[in-house]
Image: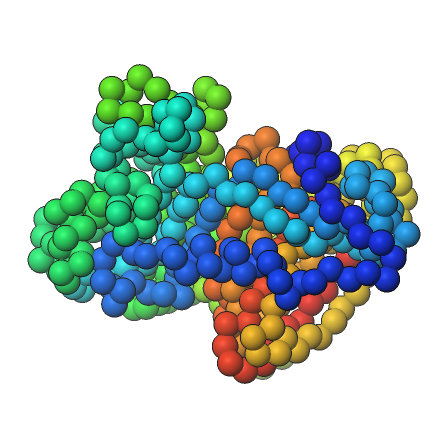
Length: 438
């Protein structure tokens, strides 16, 4: 990870005892409006709304200065007031124009994965007038281990969204249009909805329902549990594995490319939400701790039982350790030392635990902590979790990701990631939150 140094100049400071007006021009409303403008290609009844996950490419950020004695320190490396959690709220952001949505869609008896990709052309594809001269743009796409190769996708212009937009469904039958309503049929005719089971993989029943229940019963009969990391690893909607996407945009002649200065854009659906439906393993323990009967367990985060070593082997060293962090010379460690003598900490020390009642229509605003990582456990209600990259990761381009949280879902926010939580219901949202300086 690296701090985007040029953004330090964008920090807006404010004098003591002066509170920014968060009720006007709040960036969370800007993001929610962008989300509300996302319109799927088929009729809405074909989508499972609570499974939709959104990712928007992030161009730049502007933060508000920290409070208290740190208020004049724009450089985050100098923000050392621990009681303020090295916190900075977001003032504004600029997106790249690339939007990606994944989720489950339904066509007849099939419920499976889909992927929506939208794009606003940028230099060098646009001319001096800022306009791309074409009714479609070409896209190189890699989804996990599957790719288009040089057989680029043709992405048509969508006058409704004012974007070049395509939706890829994992439907393997040859009669997708017959399964959809008028809007979906029109999208297929325009080429903006395409069945591509070679790129988008997986059905809902691989993780939910009778098929999964049978896999669990078979594993239980063998004295084992279901290893979710090993189950359908190439699934586009895998509940634990991150989904890595590579994109590059070009014109019809493949003469000009928008490809991140010679490399592909890399985005990942990687928000760390675990819960009843997203976990490393599920199993059963008889006579738990010398008790009576059985206990069913789900491993959410763990440094034990081989989960961490399996995760490293499957996902690579850049994902290590999930419950710890690699130390930076300007961060406090768990012993409150700076600079730390440790290269990394493979654990999560907890310094505080809070219960929160998020009132109806209330929002925890977009902010980041320099050192602190937090866990949000939603106990009651529905929430929209927002998480994004404040720093630049070497393995992916910066983006902001949005997902629905339901009761029992637990979200891990790593140090530096900006985050927010929106109460989606007209009733109180109950939240248990804990965190610490590693």
